[in-house]
Image 1 (cartoon, protein in one colour):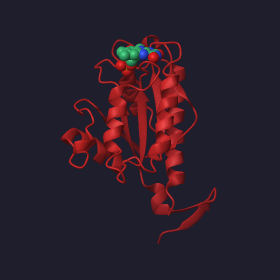
Image 2: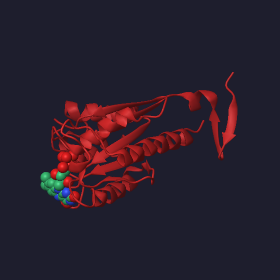
Image 3: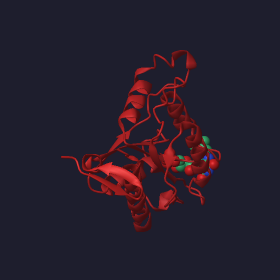
Image 4: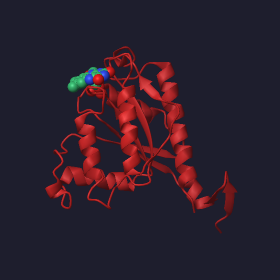
Length: 202
Ligand SMILES: Cc1cc2nc3c(=O)[nH]c(=O)nc-3n(C[C@H](O)[C@H](O)[C@H](O)COP(=O)(O)O)c2cc1C
């Protein structure tokens, strides 16, 4: 028997609440030694229980062309399918010229199309950024959050994981060594998971 309870004004059933949370993560960098890929890998080590994180590499997604949005190139379609299947999204983005990198925007554009079949619609999302500069990609995060409005995503606000001077916090093997940053990522993941569960209304 499924037991219904009311928590914080939302109705859940025990099955919905206990279902593991599947997160899809991707970085807005194709670089092999990317700091943003490194913080995503760190997230794998910091997951709350009953949570799975799959990391998707945007390498190979061709430039968006609306002529093909109904029959997408294979890699773009694969990305879109994985977004649809995920309960929540985790994005790690570099900042390029005070905004999000073209590769990230390009991938988002494919998965949001064609009009009426936006894979991101209604998904909870968390953002992290890492840059070699003193602002850690904060400006890119706010541009990305603007995109979430049209995508109809539900971002979590806190904590803001902004990794400044990433070269000092990630070692040569691509491991995030900074304890504070690891703690922030852990908290971000916990908040993303509880937010996702709150949004799972019966
Ligand atoms: C085209 C380009 C533009 C950049 N613009 C910015 C910027 O506006 N702000 C910033 O903090 N870093 C900027 N950087 C430096 C990036 O933070 C740095 O390359 C970082 O390592 C990129 O992330 P990744 O390691 O995940 O590839 C820029 C780098 C590139 C290649």
